[in-house]
Image 1: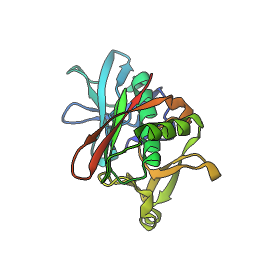
Image 2: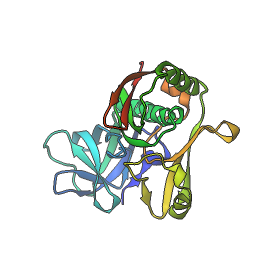
Image 3: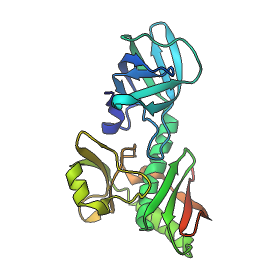
Image 4: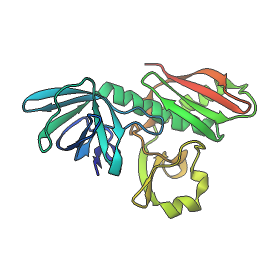
Length: 239
């Protein structure tokens, strides 16, 4: 099982690792990974691997069997051999923008307290789909509330509960379409704010900024009708 370094330190950009395998499709499996694999609406990370005799561009990372993470080369070239030590380097600017958008979407689910039916994260924008019978009539007010939360510079932290504790508290789950990431009998929670200033707590396996102030000012984009009660709310980073 690949050790997920990004889960405990989303700001780790570079570290060494050992190649422990190759996938039949030509992916590279390391014993540890700073690369987040595609999942939960967040794209897999890109970057580079460097070793004694070569450099390899990584297009994305995906989940593989046995809880491994496979790094997908950007082009078909010779792979670092199993057992070799490599330096893994993230495309940090891309990852950090994903972290900002992802955290902003958590806050969007706070100011629009409706069940979430889907979502997607990009470098410039993200979106959440809501089970929303009536169209939003106060878009400017929602945007103002969202930016107020961001400006409070609230801490973003993680916690863990057991699968049984999650089952006993189903209201923690906001997403209708994606099941919370489970594994080894425990579930990761992302908390925004603390104590009396806590504004959100929900299961999530993705990467986030350490404080909401890092998100920066955001805008609400188009609100699209995607079905009888399904409406898509787009969110854009301003810089």
